[in-house]
Structure formats: structure tokens, C-alpha cells
Amino acid sequence: MGQSLGLRQLAKDSTFNLLRQGWSIFLGLATSVLLARGLGAEDRGIYAVAILLPTLLVTLLNGGVGSSLVYYVARAEYSLAMAIQAGFLFAFVSSLLGIAVGLFMTFVARAILFPGVSVDLMLLSLAIVPIVLHRDNFVAIFQGLQDFRAYNLVGIIPQFSILVLTFLFIWVFKLGVSGAIAAVILGNLLSLLMVFVILNRRSPNTFVSWQLQRESVFQMLKYGLKVHASNVVSFLNYRADIFLLNLFASKMSVGIYDVAVSLSERLWILASAVSTVVFPRVASLRDDEDKRRLTPVIARYVFWFSLAMAALSYVIVQPIIVLVFGEEFRAAALAFQVLLPGIIMGSVSKIIANDIAGRGTPGINSIVATLAALINIIANLLLIPYLDFIGSAIATSISYTSLTVILVIYFCRISDSRWTELVVPTRADVVRVRQVLSWLIARLKRV
Image: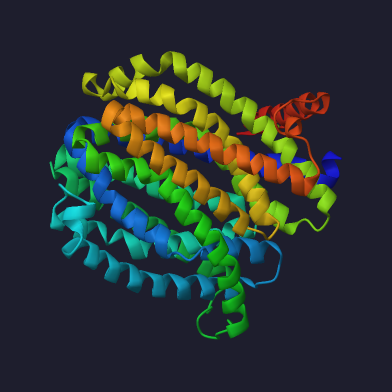
């Protein structure tokens, strides 16, 4: 069974992703500490809202092209040259549109959507949009090829660069919020340049002979837009609390809550690492029975790992936040603890959603994500006036849980599985865990 499902290779790929995610957590935490202590709670909140603009534009305008590239490259329907050309074409068009929309939001809607953030900061943050759009499309090609060595290499570069640049710009040159945004711009630009160099070596002269056909463009858009709808709604679900807190509470509340959210989402380390592998793996499988067996196995491991991490984090989070971020952020510990149930459930939903996308039916994720986002927004509106950022934490946890429950019900119907298969460990799981640990130990000894 394990051999037919390719679990050994999946474990190796997931381990590479997991190691990168571990470094990402460390680098992200270090950057978050530099931001919190260097900017303070209020400026940290302004930074979070300013970065929200390019993040929003990238999410709204990427068209789901990255996911299309993963899907069709994994199924060997696109050559490398076609994938690079498609990624560049869509990113270029989306970048132009993103800058235009960003300028409109800056000069026309800033006072309504981004109160308290200056025009200069918003204009500076727009430089992130074309860089990230191109970088994400190119990185998706590595995921589709299931080349997770290259995928993880180019994934770690921006975070390391942002950490170093954040220290220089905020702590050495005292550039404040603008320096923090500049660090994000330059860190992502370095990553984009590296991705381009690697792809150009593998497929030289890609843009000399244009291979991309109109049929391929429409095919990619058809799949990508279904994924895109899900991504947009998921983004609103993940970040609606920041928007609403900024509108109905204080910048300090946003800064404190953003620390809690960024820390809690680090617990998705295994879920993110494995789901990245699940998507192209399911897309490449031709046998529905293999798909049915693969996802429950992975979901069980991810669920129990996330549960264990959440239990440990619940106990140690307050002293760590005070020690690392300072007394000013003590209240973030309670928000973090309230978010944990949703984080645990959300780890399972990540696996199931990537399974569904790999089956070629990403539209289902869009529908479910829409329901969860509506729940999140309504709950935030009801709870923020009474509980401030703790109300946002409660609303978000409820939303993540609702999303997972609905996805589990749907997955069980299409795969003829029981929900217990997604969470209750089996004897075979124990054997596989031992095999993975043995491989990992042997690998570490060679290093």
C-alpha cells in the first residue's frame, strides 16, 4: 500500500518542506520580534495594515495562475517553457492592473479602507505587487515538477533577506515603518531574481520561441479562476479580522492581535509542508482509489501533530510572548490561546482542500470558503464591539472550525470515507512513523 501511494517519496518531500518551514518559523519569529520591539504596538499595527494592501492586491489579481501551473505541470500537460511563459504573461498583466487598482485605493479610498496609514507608505507598499506576482507564478512551477529542493531553496531566501534588512533599516538606520516595508520589497526581489536564474538555466531562450497557445491560456484560466475564487475568499476569511479591527478598534489592538495571529499560524508548519506536496501528488495520481487512501493517512498525521503542538503552545505562550515581544504584547497570549481550536481544525482543512483541488474540482473550495468567510465577518462584527481583539480571535476560531467541518463532510461523500479515518490513528500509522523517523535520523547522520 505504502509503495503504491508513494508515501516514502511523499515523506521525503514533506520533510524537505518541513525543514524549510522550521527555518521559516524561526526567521519569521525573529523578524516579528524586530518589528515589535523596533516599532512598538501602534506602528506595528500601521505596518500590518500597510502590508495588507499589496497582500490584498496579489490575492485578488493573481487569477489562480500559480495553482493552474501546479496542476497542469504535475499532470505533464505543460512543458517547462510553456509554464514559464504562461507564468510571466499572467503576472505581467496582473501587475499592471494591480498598480492601477492600488493607486485608486490609495488616493480615493484610503481614508475609508486604510485609516491611519499615510499615502507615502501605501505607495511604497505597491512595489511589492509585481515582484510577488511574478515570483509566486515561477515558484509554482517547481511545485508542479515536484522539485521540492529548488522549491524550498527559493522559498527561504526572501525570509532570510527580510530579517537582515529589517534589522538594518529599523534598528541601524531608524527608518521606521517605511524601512520595514522596504525590507519586504528587497527581500522578495532577491528571491524573484534567483528563481528567474534557475528557470533560465533549465529552459534557456524560453522567450525567443513562443510556445504558449490560446487554448492553453483559456484552459489555465478556466481552472485558475475556480481556484482564485477560493483563494480570495480564504484570504478574506484569514484577514477580515485585521480589516475590521482597524475600522472598529485601535491600531494597538491590531498590532497585538497581529502578533497572536502570526504566532498561531506557525503551528500550521506541518500542514503547510505536507499540503504543498499533496496538491501535485493527487493531481498526478490516475487511480481514484489511490487518492481515497492517500489523504486520510496524511490528515491523521497532521491532525495529531497540530494537536500536540497546540497543547504545548497553550502552556508556554504567555511567558514567551512577554520575554520575546515585551510586556506591551502580553494580551496577545490570550488571543493566541483562543485561536488554537481553529488552528487545529484548520490544519486538517488545508490537507482536504488541496486534495479537492488536485482532483480538478477547486470550485468546491470556493463555495465552502465563502460560507466560512461570511461566518467570520458576521462573528467579528458582533464580537469586536464587546471583546475587542479577543472577539476577533473567537470569530476566527469559529470560522476555521466551520470550514473544516464542511470540507470533511464533502470529502467523506466523494471518497466514500468515514470522518474517523481523518483523525483516528491506525496500527499502520505507527509503522509508517517509525519508517519516516528512521529515514530522517539516517539522513541527519549523513549531514
